[in-house]
Image 1: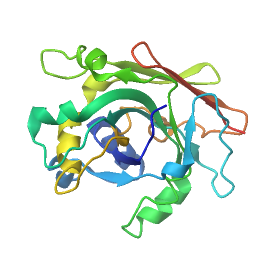
Image 2: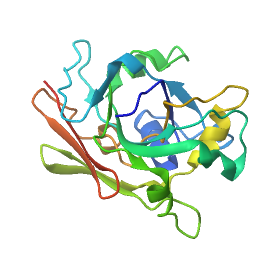
Image 3: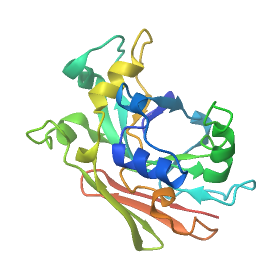
Length: 226
């Protein structure tokens, strides 16, 4: 796994945002469409594939989030449009573990997420270079990359990166405004449509569960909750 300097996790799938807000009794907001938003995650709590994830003591609503991570490979600041993707060295599977009950309470204060999100982030065992992934772009310049998530070998989530609303170029342009992105910085895509338990409305993770994310293009990410 490459050195990870920082993690900016975005919120770029319209379907995920709509479903998550609906489950909270909230309507979609116009501001979401104006620019991609993100938060900073906690880099000391990054875990590789096959590493156990301890169930959080203060949460009863532990969730996975199925994402793709772009790894910045060169210093970039104030980039624009299609040139932004040139700063990406490669891609990995990403699991943004979330403590939904803690996140819900924090967001009422209109600041965060903080402890609801910095508990753990996992990245897949394979790092795939940009030329391979970008070659899968379709006529609309969207990356055709399928991914699935299984809990204890049962399919929970499936989706495609081409359903994203804000592209990686959009995200990198936003992140690099007046701030340099440096090699080792991560840009998280945000959760795929139906890419988490919050959207599915099923029972949250328990101790002993194994969460596996699979992609023909990015490989496998597996972690067991202990």
